[in-house]
Image (tube, rainbow, N blue to C red; front, side):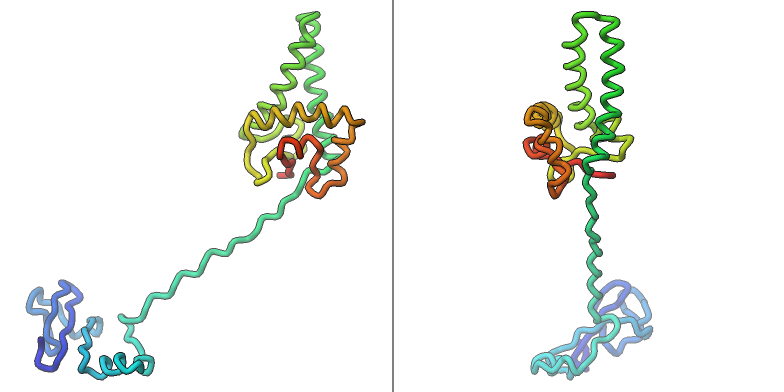
Length: 202
């Protein structure tokens, strides 16, 4: 400990040296550049101020000042647009044209066995594409739509299958299950409620 009651730290080697020293005896670094850091003993003016709770009257030196906390990132909520009734009708018509053309060629090629293959192909068409990375059939891609779960995430093949077969119920009740898209808050049909899905606009 130096005679005047405190020591300083060398910024180069971090060794304690006397506050009266001009250079560090350990590494030779200059201590008179105004960028050194000191230990204030309890007997010093600052030490007494800290003990008495009056340290606020003594401003911190540059190297003692706390670093400002980074500002939290501003999170802007994303606006969600639901796929309405008519744009979903347009997407369905596009898909129907594609499936109808495929069914026509299968019938010409396979004859009596084509209807069963057409039904399986339609199920796989909707279920595989709506659970794919695109989250949409060809018709929905053209119309800028995608199928998601209630949190906006990609759905599984099983959920897409449940949604496909739930459309049968939507059609059996005089198409009311499909018409529900026109008046429900999130533009959901009965099959969307059953499968827990949404149709969103990209």
